[in-house]
Image 1 (cartoon, helix red, strand yellow):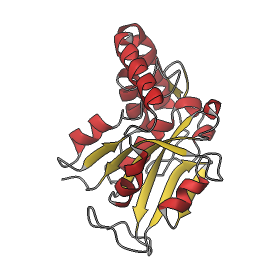
Image 2: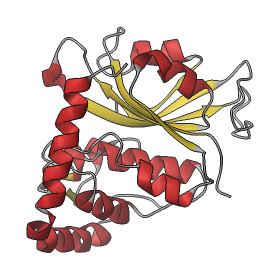
Image 3: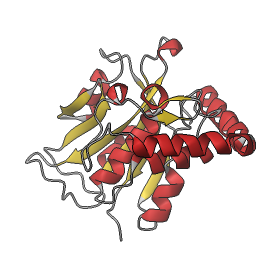
Length: 228
């Protein structure tokens, strides 16, 4: 059962529109890439924790700081997996495939799946749009890319996409693929402008978005294994 069919249909439709209009955006994509490559906002091999603080980078028709959370989530995910990719390259990839009306409404929640499946071992990447399965996928994954509603009661609070690492209680990330050991922690990147650590999936969900349990899951991508 799809948890938010209207939201997902909206992104399906607007992503398709973006692909159709891609030919008209080529010059802007090229200019954005040149500007983004010359920006000095990020330190190499460091997680991006405060998207709103990134200046001088562009995504689609606007600033990366406003609508680039999905690109930030993929950037952090690849860094966590030990296969980093420059952020300007990720932005350019999403501008071609994944942006919602040239990033006016951000990025389709599933935009990262194609790249991840090309890069990682076959069968290691799963996707889910059913809130009843989100916890199960999170608990069986090494890293997740999670799109949430910041407030299920106020659509105007918009959506946010984050990278979440699942690590053992001693801080190591050498969990076996698909394992569910006790004492795991969830490290959320680019949430509220900082990294946040939670002792359980329930604690994480209670604090995400506007907090107080107001957030709601929309779409999850789970990565179970490292690169082959």
